[in-house]
Amino acid sequence: MKPRYDIPCNIAQSLNIIGDRWTLLIIHEILVGNTTFNEIKKSLNGISSNLLSDRLKYLEEEGLLTAELYSSHPPRYRYMLTESGEDLEHVFNSLVVWGSAHLKKCYKKLVDSETGDELEIAYYNKRTGKLVENVKVVPVE
View 1 (cartoon, rainbow, N blue to C red):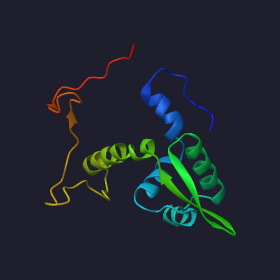
View 2 (cartoon, rainbow, N blue to C red):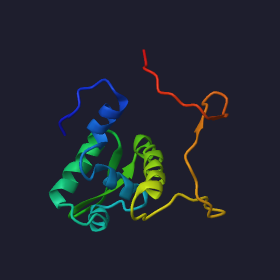
View 3 (cartoon, rainbow, N blue to C red):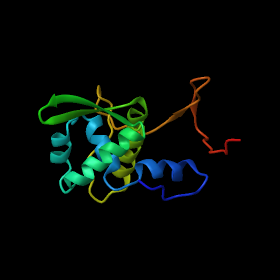
View 4 (cartoon, rainbow, N blue to C red):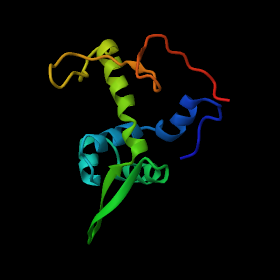
C-alpha cells in the first residue's frame, strides 16, 4: 500500500499501515479466531478474494501477522497475529466503547466477563501503575 499521509503524527502514520478499507476488519477477524483465508472471507461479506489476499500479504510485510502453511496441495495458510497485531485489541475495544455510546444502532458492548457490567477505557501510569485522570499527548523529541 502506498502511504497516504506524509504528516509527522502517530495517528497519520498508523493509518498508513492500518487505515485502508477492510484492514482493521481483517485483523479483527484473526483476533477473534477466524485464521484461515476462507474463514476470514466468509465473515467479511463483500470483500473480494483479491483484495483479501493483497491485504493479508501487506499485513504480513508490515509485521502485524504471520502466515503458516497448513496444507500444501493446494497451498493454504493459517494467519496469526504478531504481538504488534495483537496490541490492536485495545483499539478495537476503544471502538466498541465509542460505538456503544454514539452509534444509532449498537451491535456490541465491552463488558466484564465475570459480572457482565459494561466497561469503559482507563489509562494507567506505566511506571507507577496508578490510574491517570488527566491524559495529554506530547511530542517525542
